[in-house]
Amino acid sequence: MAQPRQYTAQNLLVRPQRDARDPDLILSITPEKAGWDYISFQVRHLAGGQEWSFQTDENELALVNLSGRYSVASNRGKWQGIGGRRNVFEGAAHALYLPRETEFTVRAEEAGDFAVTWVPSDEDHQPWLIQPEDVPVSIRGGDNASRQINDLLPPGSPVHRLVLVEVYTPSGNWSSYPGHKHDVHREDSQGNVIEADLEEVYFYQIDKPEGYAYQRVYTDQDSPLQQAGFAIDALVCAEHNCAVLVPEGYHPVVSAPGYTTYYLNVLAGSAQSLANQDDPRYAWVKNSYSGVDPRLPLY
Image (cartoon, rainbow, N blue to C red):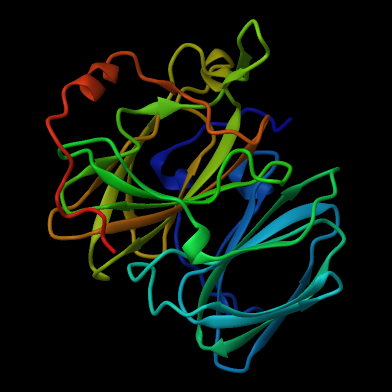
């Protein structure tokens, strides 16, 4: 297990970075930098015809197109036409799942950006290309807490740990609300998971580049971090191509008026699950909604 550490707004926010040794890298998160056990995450750019090669080793991995179009050749198979949307606001993503011990090369059929994430695994599963038309799309919440959910790799998927979700929050709306947490593994008397212990990445894109969202991350007395003397209470300003780390605690989001916020959620931990607990102070709001924001769905 990762050693407890102090988290602040500064070290929960990951900004785009430039690396002369890896000029196509937009953003990178490692377990060492994040202070956790599982999730590695990158966002990368490829020009048309350009390639990037990688191997999963003892990890399961997923690739999500943000823009552009790609082909992937590997020792597990070949796939073409992955992607095609000009940006994340045009439709659901493709997601390619690859198991451990996979060597692969991504080639850009059309220039664009993609996210890639991997977590340790001791299980073997089959490669799987998730097509946009097969992605369940739903509206969650209500009133000004309405948001659109694209379940790319939902609980119950034939994988080990990874869960992937795309979320769209219209101008002025809240999402991940009421605040919920998943930082303690709990099961009921029948063995059903009622809360999973999950790490989570929020990778943000905004429909206009100057836009932003705010995310609060805060723990309570049940948090293992807080019990170890490392409480979190941080308000993070998330801009385009930034990521927010959620190691523990509640983590609601609000989108600035005038801007639509997108984020890609990557989760992994004690179960391939989204089981969580609402902050009991705010859970009542779920029973107060009078309708759904008519701006949704976006497409």
